Amino acid sequence: MSWAESGSYDFDVVVIGAGPGGYPAAIRAAQLGARTAIVEREAWGGTCLNWGCIPTKAMIASAELAWQARHGESLGIVAPGLSVNYRTLLEHKQATVRKLSQGIQSLLRANGVDMIEGQASFISADRLHVRGPSGDRWLRVRRVIIATGSTSSFPPGVPTHARIVESRVFLDLPELPARLLVLGGGYIGCELAAMAAMLGSQVTIVELLDDILLLLDDDARAVVRRSLERTLGVRILSGRPAESIEAGDSGVRLRVGDETLEGDVLLVATGRRPMTEGLCPERAGLPLDPKGYIRADARNRTSVPGIYAIGDVNGGPQLAHAATSQGLIAAEDACGRSPRPNEHLVPGVIFTHPEVAMVGLTEREAAQRGVAVNVGRFPYAALGRALAAGEREGFVKWIAEADTGRLVGACAVGARATDLISEAAVAIRAELTAHEVGRTIHPHPTFGELWMEAAHVLEGAPVHIPPSRKT
Image (tube, rainbow, N blue to C red; front, side, top):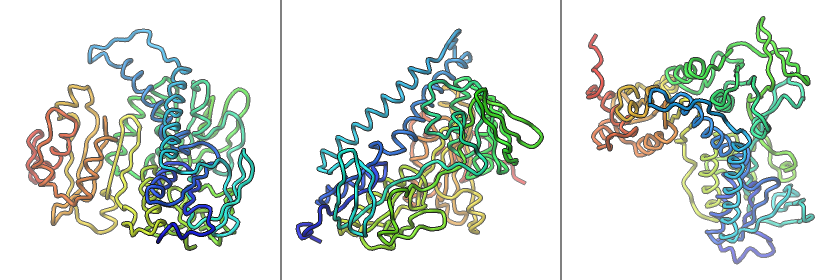
């Protein structure tokens, strides 16, 4: 395909949405020689940068620092009278967001991407209308990559009130509520509950399902729940719905079973829905599935030729790094390349206390698929580096095919788990065996040794924990 033959088209590729999927897609298309534009209606960087991944981690970093200072007696750190300046904490969060957003805009400009502010709507499959602060623009385009993301959804029965908020509003509250009620025990609810508890809030999580974080295996979930409840003092009510939710000037009230809970703020973290409002996909002949997603194939192509959908809006993994990978693949396909299909191995990370991360198959998924596996676990409490840092809680585990030893899954729960999981992802993607990881020298003393030690356990030859008893 020669972009010089694009004729009367205004752009070869237009990306709608400048989040973690959209802006990499635009940059990659421009690098491949396409005349590229990106349309963003609200904030460069999207939800992840402005109201999701980055601001939450900035606030969690502050919360963890405060928690460690208050509970560092065993390491010789005593900080009487320590206080948290929440206003400065928020300023740090905003400064981080602002710096990264400016960086994204600089990258787009450096790659020659035309940046357009406004709401993009389809007129037809190859025509867009953009309504923005500088007026209206009508664009004729060869290829469109939809990267509009998702937004929080409220379940039925939740009233509208200033004291009932979703995560975006919660992160901008000028003060941390003394009593926080969290509706939903998924990763967003648990991360923000942990953050608030570390900063001193009295926190209660209400989860309709039988337990929190049901995407995890039982062993990892148990460690996180135990830490939330016993270490951070978070109360968790699972297996029962929240009913009779009321809010007023003095606070929020709801009922769980026979008990009435009261709080200053109710954080609703029960799920997300795709963002297609204002997009008018029906004008391009794009169908939405029953849940409102724009479905796409393994190269992110929709049912309409020339239109792609990436990230949260296509119903795949709702993870920023998955969206980035899909965006690069969609851009290459849109520019006439023959890219690989979407990666099927997508790590997940949860910034609770302790952190938890996973990649590949869980034990439950392996059982559901009929895959016979062996599991090797190694505890933080047996690792020199973890003991030196005062981080005894948690473990890592490998999941390997029983007949070949090939690694097919991994989980880490404990300090730095979200960083540790990258080694596991590389090993699984490279189809390494436990034997190969176990023979790889890992520097000592480091947290990374956990993977080597767990591989030794999986092979039945642990060095730093007693061998399992023969039965």
